[in-house]
Image (tube, rainbow, N blue to C red; front, side, top):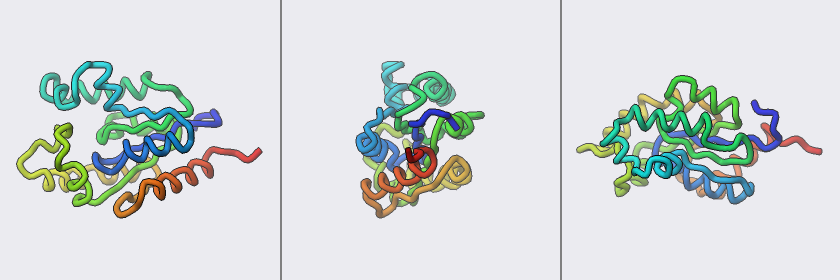
Length: 178
């Protein structure tokens, strides 16, 4: 873990689990900078995530995610929303864990489908049966998300409630009383 008194918080999990929404609220509450790996990639390339997948392929997208983690942000006082597949790249889970607190956000396949079904910016769900694909990918990735960090279920919970719990975990993990 970093020696810094305000290490980053990394939010990981499947798409639609609330990483960006919760991350923005958490950053505001802690007065930290909010960063989204997908936003950084789009700004760097000038392309949308679906365009990168279509024109350059998923491996290029994954290499850009890795670049973001290795050099695209400060090492303290940031809330970072990570792409859903980032922690499955070799060494990325360990890189996040060495830089701060990793929180894995979880939601049911049905909740994820409801949250993402009208979002055209989700190339992995551009299939005939997106709910089936969500279930398949969730099953494939579940153990990786569990191993990455402290888990929080977002189904049926409010953003303020989730943020409160993340702050409690963070304070217990890093913030020393003076």
